[in-house]
Image (cartoon, rainbow, N blue to C red; front, top):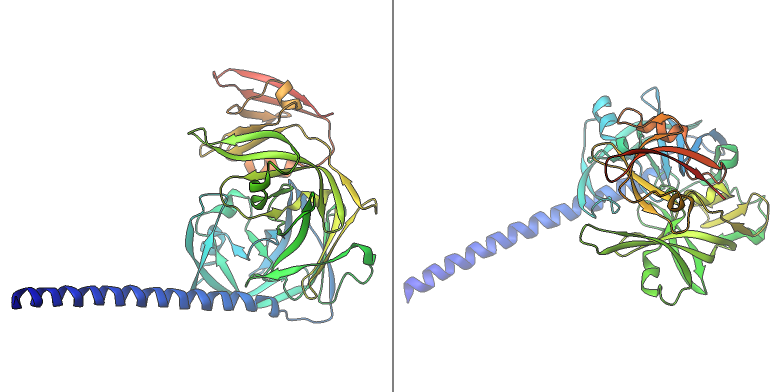
Length: 405
């Protein structure tokens, strides 16, 4: 009996020690995470000038706003991502040999695998956008090389914009940043409340589909019109036109691409709008595609926003596209992963799994992928034809001409 109690006590002591170690590690991890977010939260206050309004020339292609940023005396190309945090690419961090990583933040890429990873949070002494200088900001380092896949040196996130007002005018390829409100000259009828959430100061705006309302993130890092995870449960109640479905290797439905007769964003009616309804948990967002049709003003400082269509109406009607979606495979091949029903792509005989070898004579490979997205804007609502050279499922090459109605 004494022998039993002796060994039982040892086991309980060992279990207690293991539990204490695990708890201590978890507490330490949470403390570092909390400290990381506090550092990131302070980024929007690290502006070295006051009383400014600065206009910055940008590029806008395929739903991405490319902003020139100066770091260490050199100009880099960053994507403006209101739905993300400021991030630097792995290759740029290695090139600049950043040291002094003091904290780690948990970061997720939900469109990849929903994996939560620990990313280094590093200090940058100077970060300049136009004439606006940010000092001693904390920036998350990308550890999965996503920035390289996006052909970018990094992201400008909402954590830098939290004390500012920003005007996105993509018809004129410019953004305007100011530390005072840019809504003073906007028709009050277009101004709506905006909710700011989290350490990164993410902007949330209200949308409505058939009187069902939600606050969703306005995310310029999302290239298309949007993804509404919250509405998938109500698909049977919401009248929509299913354009295409994406299934995984086992045949399970991953997402539906639908068009709504009307979706109200703020106070603007968008008609014939294409939206993704994912089955798996993803963020519900309105993306950058609206910037082809309207100026958007985000007043982080005062919690307000406005969407002003370029024709000054309160209505946007979205034209149909070519009806083909694609992605770059691990072999750097451009592979078709979605075909819209009754679209030019379907009528031309394209199918999921076809590989696109050339577009309008432009050869696609690993070296040309970034130039491809600079040369062609696949989301721009103009342009009537595209000539594709594709490889079908049997390995045969054929030329296809897509004509948009």
